[in-house]
Amino acid sequence: MSEAVKTRGKLIQGESGPWEVVIGLEVHAQVLSKAKLFSGASTEFGGAPNSHVSLVDAGMPGMLPVINDFCVEQAVRTGLGLQAQINKVSVFDRKNYFYADLPQGYQISQYKQPIVGEGEVHVDLPAGESVTVRIERLHLEQDAGKSLHDQDPHFTFVDLNRSGVALMEIVSKPDMRSADEAAAYLKKLREILRYLGTCDGNMDEGSMRADVNVSVCRVGGYEKFIETGSFEYLGTRCEIKNVNSMRFVAQAIEYESRRQVEVLESGRAIDQETRLFDNKSGVTRPMRSKEEAHDYRYFPDPDLLPLELDDAFIERIRLSLPELPDAKKARFVSQYGLSPYDATVLTAERETAEFYESVAKDRDAKAAANWVTGDFFASLNRDNKAIAESPVSAAALGELIDLIADGTISGKIAKDVFVIMYETSGMPRAIVEERGLRQVTDTGAIAKAIDDVIDSNPQKVEELLKKPKLIGWFVGEVMKRTQGKANPQAVNELLRAKLGDRIGS
Ligand code: ADP
Ligand code: MG
Image (cartoon, rainbow, N blue to C red; front, side):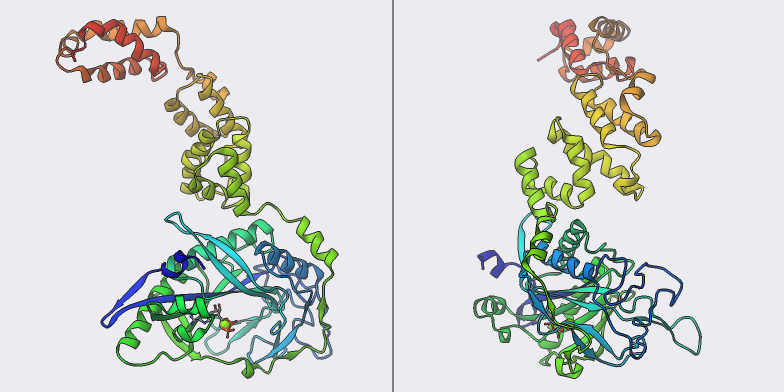
């Protein structure tokens, strides 16, 4: 483990001294698949209640689960994307508990033998450094249904559309040291899942949600934990269930870590418990004391054989993996000479990276990066539009950059042209021609404008002797007379030639 890992993170000052924060996340990511994990029912979001429910999902007696190959493939693909160990034999277990939205009376999950073992994620922090968060495991499991408490004053309703939908539970090691790191980890994990096409990462629709484990310990505790691997050096954790946005994850951690420090500073101990985050008041509240694995009476599901994967299956998936964010980012830095920051921004989504690469092709890559991350992103963000909905295509933006490069328009006029392109979906060359925005490089026309400005402002010409900076005012006037179309460099040169002896020093 590097020095940076040992010492990083944010400390909380207590009366008796500083405390370190330690965070581990269990992320539930819904597998992108048309059908459920053990039935053929649809996984589509937003159907009428109980319209996507097969007899298997409803827990009818005698129904048998049949594994969906595609979900297995998606889990393996995700494991490979997390640079993780793929377990060629894994086992589905029954996790027994009673709840109204769990018709079988148990959830089919994986416990001792998950499909994916240890891996890692490289997390980019806002300040520019990056840290590694280790992955403990990834297992496949079924989602439960949903209890609806707000439909009737007397009854709770149950919607089983989600019942049986495939989830990947991705469990990290307790390697995050602040709310910012946890949010950045989630962001990176979501990026990777989206690149892989194994989860849409849509937190609003519940396709990705996190159980957030938080503890605090005395400074040095985490380092000891890393050295020895022993959890005894860490504090007792609380688990905050089902947090469904990055902002709430960060808020829950801020609140919970402070609460734990207060409890410890007052001489009490932390109870290991499951808590809920109330996003309206920003606090966490106890939900239940922590359950133990033995409470669930896990046992291998007798309806399902152990899952065995062969090398050819794994290799076929490995070969089909796309270039992932880390590799793409490194390539953008070396191939295009971009800063790590720009490269990170441009590779955050696959669509963004593709868009950038088609703009940059055979052009000044840095100029392309500036346009994409600048005016282009600003306009899309303002209107809350995705790249796919952009009125400005990559070809159009590329053409605009060409027009600047060959001197047809100035960088300043280009900004105006961009606004018109965005409003009209038009191509820049046509816009420039139609609106007569071509840069004037014809020195005759510029000279004429300069003479006009000099002739009508004798006073200013006098002042120029004492105030050489006034030359800027002359440039501005000439630009006005040419509606901003004069080539600024030509204006400057001609002005200096004409007024040279008048400019003071
Ligand atoms: P469970 O299902 O009982 O919550 P898991 O082993 O599946 O147990 O998940 C435990 C999660 O809690 C992991 O993400 C792990 O990194 C994290 N964790 C374990 N101990 C601590 C601790 N002391 N502080 C913070 N997080 C912890
Ligand atoms: Mg847990």
